[in-house]
Image 1: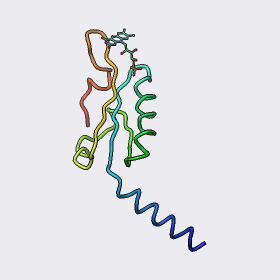
Image 2 (image 1 turned 180 degrees about the vertical axis):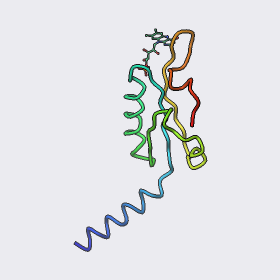
Image 3 (image 1 turned 30 degrees about the vertical axis):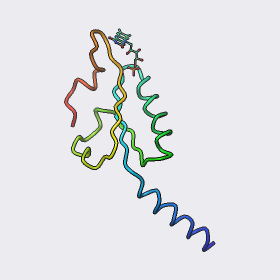
Image 4 (image 1 turned 45 degrees about the vertical axis):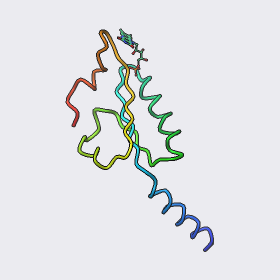
Length: 89
Ligand SMILES: Cc1cc2nc3c(=O)[nH]c(=O)nc-3n(C[C@H](O)[C@H](O)[C@H](O)COP(=O)(O)O)c2cc1C
């Protein structure tokens, strides 16, 4: 039992040291959200990853992020999805 607790502590310590990656997505029909979540799973092997919808993200949190990935679609004349057009928090 002690060995398991020790291994868990080591594992959590190691996880907390990983660089922080944030993935923001903006979507109309859900494809970018799906892709952002898949990307999150893949990057989760090497980074401490969080995935957010663009409209839910507080931009002041960017200063704590080591890597930022943005997944979005375009519509019409290369316009971004609706949620991207609104003001980011
Ligand atoms: C009406 C309409 C307009 C589109 N306009 C563009 C465009 O200008 N450029 C582009 O690359 N893709 C365009 N697309 C393709 C979408 O970007 C594509 O379907 C995308 O995968 C949708 O992703 P989402 O579900 O994350 O919004 C358009 C699709 C539709 C239905």
